[in-house]
Length: 191
Image 1 (cartoon, rainbow, N blue to C red):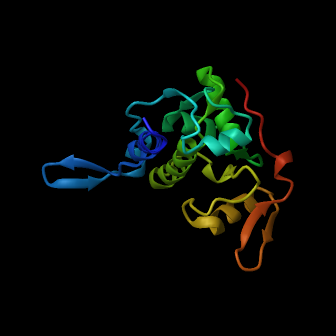
Image 2: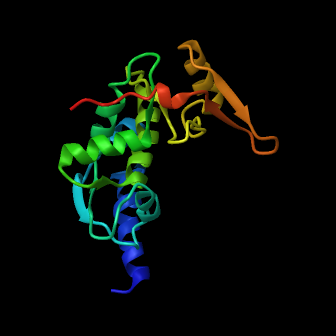
């Protein structure tokens, strides 16, 4: 199978399966709620052998992954459970979530693309269902706030400042917000 077809196959596994936002009814298609998307873990978890054609390959390579390392595509409810563990005043990154999920499944790595998609779904489901998941405490690996969260960066900024975090604005043209000294506030997830 050529590289292009492998990339298409993996992309389908990682993205389309997760974000299939419609389901069939007698009246046609009805858009799924965020909670339904979170609970719809079809064929996950799935453990694969890492290939350079995977959409998450470059991100995993930066984390030390090599071709043929084992990678888990974890279900959204597992991402949700990890995000629920973050106490007030502390933070969590995509990388920390991935390390925890990989450890839970006894594999080398976790797909950062799939996990990133589920972080967004968890945030929107928490907002939609008014649950106790503190999604705003999950930030990008470099301490940047997530503009895709409900209410955008402004809401996440407000909630984090309320918990005592200092937010720093960077850039002139493309403004981004970061948490000052975020690395000292990222939790270490216990087993």
